[in-house]
Length: 116
Ligand code: AMP
Image (cartoon, rainbow, N blue to C red):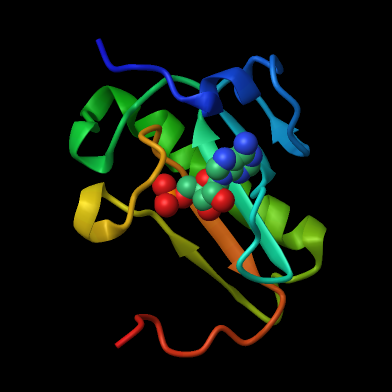
């Protein structure tokens, strides 16, 4: 059994977060340490530690993460200018919280995709 992270507590509303959207599959909330004017995390409600742990049964939640990111981007007024969706995996990917999450980042031109 994978160990829960603080994201499970946010999903269950046991610790505070600025939740923008929640349904039966996913939750979207503002990143506590924003890297851009808009920085939102979209997470599955069930614990999937990394992208490596995804299986076919997760596809509904994984697909919903994308459609919810698009919906929230529109709500935030950044859809037309554009934004970036990022999902980090394990150490080389820079993953810090082992409950997969899609970063929705925008509100300014983000520059090249990767740091040199
Ligand atoms: P990653 O490096 O892809 O695992 O990203 C983890 C993200 O979670 C970082 O951008 C953190 O700022 C964010 N984060 C950590 N704790 C919280 C929290 N309590 N509420 C919202 N975002 C958080």
